[in-house]
Image (cartoon, rainbow over all chains, first blue to last red):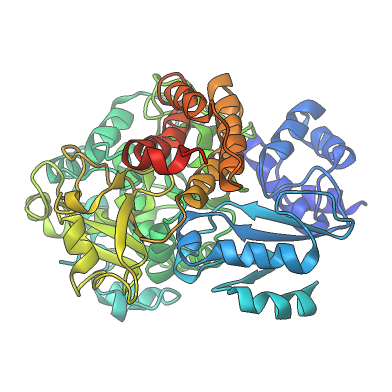
Length: 147
Length: 410
């Protein structure tokens, strides 16, 4: 049995479980591609297009696989007031990337929407690690240890 | 004045006993054993409670509409999606006193006749979701919820539903679509969810903070609640102070408190942060109005104010902040979060983002101001849902207050 099937069997094939199942598959696999969507569609008796269109809608579900290490920094106003801009510039400089740009072969720096950690910003995420109160001076260490 | 945060220092979120000891679940008991659903609704209507998610719709009216609509089954949903930048007060309630939300939810479900209840929670709120899961198990063990709640023939089954990163899913009809396994695009209203909601059934969707007020209203009475705050906007609100204040954080204050009070009073913000000077304030989050210092004496309440308080965020922006970075922050957020359903928002937020990027790089062009004003008009007047309107608000205020700073050509 594939790991997708193992996850699917935890859910009754009802519409309210569709997003739940996709979330779990994403957590396990870090991406939900067209082949996975096909299995999910079969289990739920839904068209592939329906499942794929749901998967491609949400920020936390990736329909594309990537080998790059992704760094995300919150783009919200509160983090900005706490100098998130300086953190972004520092990361750009140290890694030779530009925020939002996909050109670097190993790293991608992205902006992300507010995570509701505004009391501890700026917030930065590398893989699944969440860093809080990040300052430009911390970037050097974080890159050395987590990338 | 404490309604929401009352007794929080005595409560351990993972210990239902600590909530029971300070009177927890007594309101639910009173509702199910001593009151009819109609009486519960009447009490909430009398209290004047209005939704705390931002829209401020009268809660009692919403419950009444769902109760009156005949259907084979009904649903009740707690909206804990909370994705507005600068807002995290619902997370705090869930982490500090999850049972307060659960009790409010159960009372609401009883009032409208819903057996199935969902807590729709922001997919990133892992900690809060785990705490709520444990709290739900404990409440079920005590038979406060679940089959035969409080020993009555009433079933109240509460489940958690986790979202997957979409601001638009905080909008109630987009929320419903995502729960039904559809893209989180909003629906046309009317019909409103209390008439036709989840799977076409009557559904009440209330913000978590709204629900956190319910136990107090039943325990102390609608009249007591109605006397706090303002007549047309009673009760208290959790305000979230951020930016250049001495004490950033979440504070409970009566509705009708002024912005100046919230920022400077030592009970709340405690004044401007050391070494910084106040420039302006943004309310409500990325979608909120900009308030110049001269207008800070205005009260924050639902309904009658010049500046909408929204979900209660107060961002203090200090002098020296590059406005172009803020403009980009707003444009970046809305272009990412636009659901794509309607052309004006899908295209408008994208083009605004493109222009914002150039302005941030000091690469302004001659027609920028004209184009931005046209985009803002389109977003403010023609989009399918309020997200488009939200995308325009802060930009429009920025242009009105600081237009020449943004578009000055070298």
